[in-house]
Amino acid sequence: MFEGYGLATARSVRSLRFNGPGTALTLEELAAPTRGSGECLVRVGSVGLCGSDAHIVSGHTPTGHLPITLGHEIAGTVVESSAGAHVAVGDRVFVNPILGCGTCRACADQETNLCPRRRMLGIQVDGGLTQLLAVPVGNVVPLPPGTDLLSAALIESAGTAHHALRVAAVRADDLVVVVGVGGLGMQVLRLARSRGARVLALDLDPASRERAQEAGAAAALDPSTEDVAAQLAALGAGDGCDVVIDCVGAAATTEGALDLLRPGGRCVVIGIGVDAPRLPPPGVFVRRSLTLSAVYAYSAADIAAVVRATGDGTLPLRPSVSRVVGLDEVEDALADLEARRGSPVRIVVDPWLGTSHSWSST
Image (tube, rainbow, N blue to C red; front, side, top):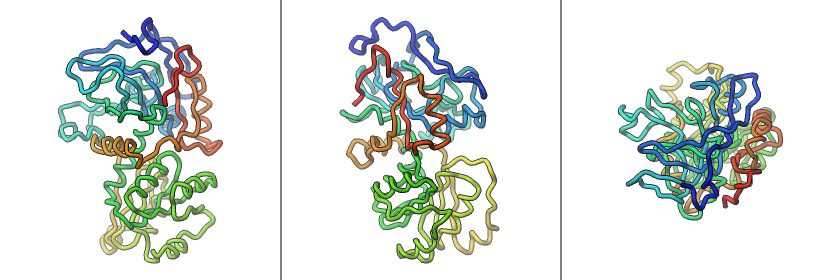
């Protein structure tokens, strides 16, 4: 059933399993998945690693069951499809990892990220750190011809970045401060620049600041040692910036973000922190007409917009791929990601790397 993909005799797949906090990830041979009704079978070509994966391994984020196959940033190639589906065998696709209930208002509005009964691949159910994955046809998004499959997994984080900029209503000539320019922050920066906005990047890491300037930031500062207010004034925003996108979500970054806004400014938080910020009283928000919002993940419309942006070259994803690893290297890669060793933007997993079916995904 997998002719043309080197999988004609596949009976098992390699999957990376998480068995619980404090235990090592295990690489296991599992039975190859079969396609159910309304599903397609995807040959996984790339899986992005992010802070959420590291939080699961460290025990800060619970999973739906154990053991579980991690991985929620997924792209691949369809090797089996259902009759009448919008994708065919051979199509390169992004896999939307959010599984909605299909019956609530959010699902009807194509906003499965708001579904109260949503589940996510790699967190509540088995995810993409495997070689073959059966997923609902409605969760696969066709990619433009020639899409670089290795970096296409990063469409997931770019969807969150697009959602944040949409909620912040970023316009041309807005001055946007991006707090934290790691993997997610770099997507915010590039998408904000594509809208004609100016960007001031804030990050403690010198390599991240350098990358931000190379990607078009007007300036990149270390907020722990440099005067951000003075830089805003130098950029013609002495009364504050138009928008802050907080990609860290720590109490200190959200508190500091509000201090950077002009009257009428908007702050959107997309980093997932654990400490509660000390916010100003409501009267301050009212008198200064400030908006503080938070967004989780993305809608179908956000993903569609990102796919278009990658297809027309507006949003290059390959520069964000810092390193490519195989399944047997994921544990070390997650440790590097959490410690920011080597200042990685995104580490991408090729589940076929080092096997007889390893291939070029460009």
